[in-house]
Length: 200
Image (cartoon, rainbow, N blue to C red; front, side, top):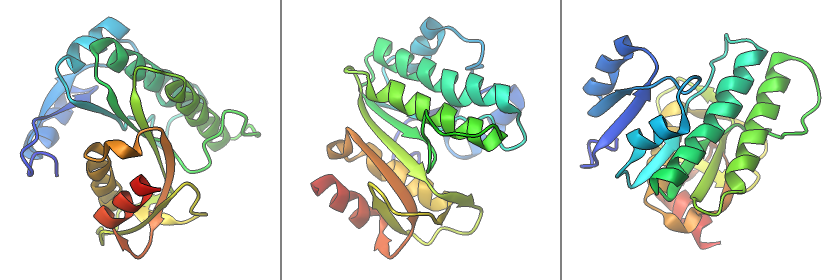
């Protein structure tokens, strides 16, 4: 989406074999493992960018330890690096229900705590114009471009396509800086939903 509208896009990947997917989407692959990279290394990759989006995740099959090393620590590292590189516009893909104090010992509980702690760390940064997006359950259904985007939407699902469309729109809407937003499928076109929340 970003490349199609004329933006220069780079995507950080952990494995070189992931590069072709990014090239086909019009993005330049950047090889960097956020679990082992230093803030300086990541900042060097972000140098000169107008915006950064943190959308990495340990994945549904990973154990509790990687929820902390990726979903929490890598998100904090990426925010530190963006600040160091002078990239003010910063959008985070979090999760509905993320909360650093979330109870429970299941892997998903650990995930929600990790995401919540990462969100708290991003909110504490004065050098970032951050927006935190918390989608509901992600589906692989084709996007309809119709969403509900609010501070609190209640539980629901949303296609990954529509999450991507909202992210692209958020990048262009600096008035959403400082907002934590929940996202599910709804009845408002993406651009209308983002403009509406930006005006509140």
